[in-house]
Image (tube, rainbow, N blue to C red):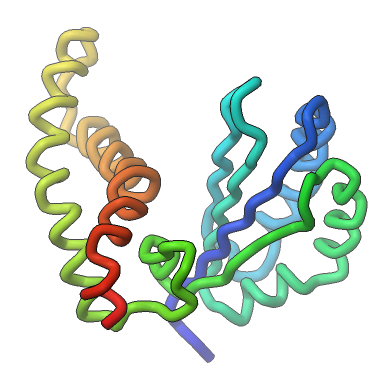
Amino acid sequence: METQGASVVITHHVLDGKETEYEKWLEQIVPLTKHSEGFIDHQIVRPIPHLTFIYTVIIRFDTIENLKKWMESDERKKLIEKANPLFRKNDNYKIRSGLDFLFETGNETKVPVRWKQFLVTWSAIYPLSLLIPLVLLPFLRFLKIPANHYSDGLMISGCIVFLMVFVVMPNYTKLIRKWLFK
């Protein structure tokens, strides 16, 4: 049994005008996902209204086995069939172990070796861990949010993870693709 976590990145290209129906569909599938064996957490990245149409859903499970069980379950298949009329393209997803999805460049099907993943992640997080507190903490104090070690840590780590997943890693991995996948 695999003990390392697993993530799935799902993209749904929703037809114009079908966003409300899709959101209602999410209200059905999300609770079922949360109650699946091994579920850890999920994140939904919604499109920018009137500009983009792609929903991205990231779901984490404790093992690849539990993630595959959910993704291949009859419950999920029935709900996907129900939502298919809302999609421009079919349900599209990729399963990765651990944080492998951070190293996805779009063209590569293989995953970099772990020591390279470690070095790249560390080299990206280190400058963010220095810069984000310098920018964020004065901003929080300006907004009159009192200093608190735990809430400050929560805000700082949330900003770092957001930037890592959506800004830094997609661009960084493209920049160092040759070395990373060598």
